[in-house]
Length: 170
Image (cartoon, rainbow, N blue to C red):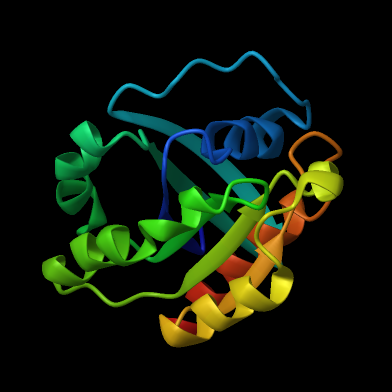
């Protein structure tokens, strides 16, 4: 028996680290040889948060533009969202407006995080944390979190944060 069930969507450009983030969260292992997501991938995880048993249905969207048309179908009923970009690739942040406009078109409102991945590659950073924070504010996203799927830094925190935001909203 669950106290709550939430649908979480993860989206962003191809190569930003969405699948490795999800796989790290699900297995606590870094899988460097993940394949490009074709369309949509789906995982379920049950967590205990503040004494409540919560089931997360996590949807990982292929980042290529040709798959963007799928997003509106899966946005419906979402309780939370994670827009992911790669801190070593400024171009991965350029399409944030396009991705968020797809979500807005559906008319659903829910908590959303901006997540900068590949923090373990800090020496190759192209997107400053300040730039990420500016984008999060300008897009009315709830929070910016940077993470590393390779080291595991902040991976649990991302999903704990989005879950707390969803619990507090509903």
